[in-house]
Each structure stands twice: as structure tokens, then as C-alpha cells.
Length: 204
Image 1 (cartoon, rainbow, N blue to C red):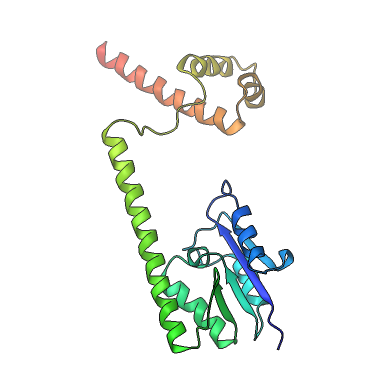
Image 2: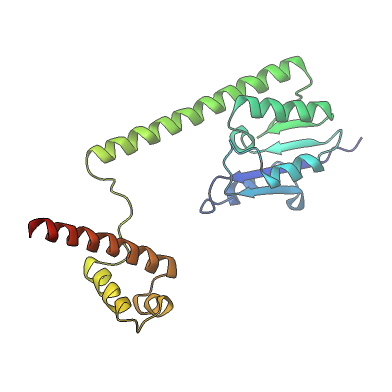
């Protein structure tokens, strides 16, 4: 029976690069046209089109290859589900240079241990991220995204809009921002203006 290597690579965000994973898979013998990928999908998201295509392409006697287990799954139940699916179809799983047969008792045990560690590592990363953000907030270093326009520019944008001579598209072009940003700025300035009017009325 012919053993075809089916590769899978995934990155969580569009800004990450799959090049390292692709190179690792090809070094393991996976042909470039047999590598399936997912961009912008977390490991906890089971609805991954690239993964579904890769699993569908694997036939009995083939080997499903990933560079690291956390590229395939980030939870033990998900890893077990994928492992059970591969085993039921006679497909072996290769993680890096190690090949595991999920249908073999020892292979299944080792696979589950790896999945447990992968989930534990993911939980640690999430915990450290939350702790880091909380610490940054307490020190006043995490205040959200800065507005694209200064206060003066925002007020000028509102003044120009109120004249009725400028459309949203015109303002977007003048201030080099997107139309949604124009709408957000107008909404923000309207709220501030309303607050100023209430304050003035209260003082009077």
C-alpha cells in the first residue's frame, strides 16, 4: 500500500508567517502540493477549512504530518477526536520526526500525553497574557488604540461636516482616513458636544 504524506500547517493570525512550518514539512518529505493550510484560525477553532481538506485527502496507509501538535489542535478533546478519526481510517500521525499510530495502545497513550501538554502550554500562554495585560493596565501602559486624528483635527472634521459642503467621502480623502473612521469621529464628537451642552446648561 502506498504511503502518501499529507501535511497541514496553521497560523492563528493573518500577520503570522507559515513559511517556517511549510519548510519543516517539506524537509520531512511532504510534497508542497500536498500541504494544506489555514490562515487566521486558532487551534481551538475546529471549523478549519484547510484542516478539513487535509483530513479528507488522507487515505488508509497514508501519514498525516504536522510540524508540532499545537498546529493541529490546542485541546485534548479536539486532539483525541482527530486521532480517533485518523485511526479509524488507517492513517498514521507524524508529529515532527516522530510517527505515531493512534490505533496502537502505546501510540495512543503517547499521543494523549502530548495533547495534554499542548493544552496545558496553551493555558499557560493565555494566563500569562492576561496577567501581562492586567499589569500593564495597572501601570497605565495599556490605554487602547490612539485616535487617528488629534483633538483639533476631529473638531475641524466636525465643523467641515456641519457646513454641509463636504460629504463623508470628501472628509475621508481630506484627512487621509477611511469612511468608517469618519463616522466614528463624528459620533464621538457628537457625544462630546452633547456633554458640553448639558454641562453649560447645568452651570447656567
